[in-house]
Length: 210
Image (cartoon, rainbow, N blue to C red; front, side, top):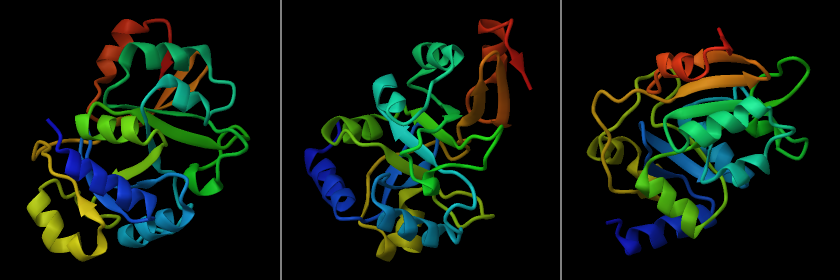
């Protein structure tokens, strides 16, 4: 059971442009409202990363929320969402023209791309249910450092910079999500992670995976 008081406090922090720490289905993540550019800049400063240096992952709670962010999703993308979401699988898809460049990754094949995941975490699902807007989530660390997964360590290192640390837990040896770029008939593994590639090969034997 997720404490309603914690959820209310987290939603207030997100609504006021603060960065929170939230347990996802893989790692604890710095989390902000995806539509709040000021909050996104604050998150990037915590990461010591230049805005737009590379894409970020957006957490959604449905295929419908995802489709509002992507342009002409390949049929393969819809099949992956319906079979493997929610889960530890991040899909990189062509972004709509209305999506800010700060949320998209490097151009490929003349397109801007956006990374989306429907996460398994009950905390994330509760936040997105009460506040149905996409969230940016990225591991809690400065770029190049290992991610922090223990709330106590996060509090000691980042407490003064965060609007809230949501209670929860992730496995000490947790790995980040698997990231796939999805094109029609082809999947490109951009990051191997918690979702096994072998499962993709067994479920989609006729799809090229590289």
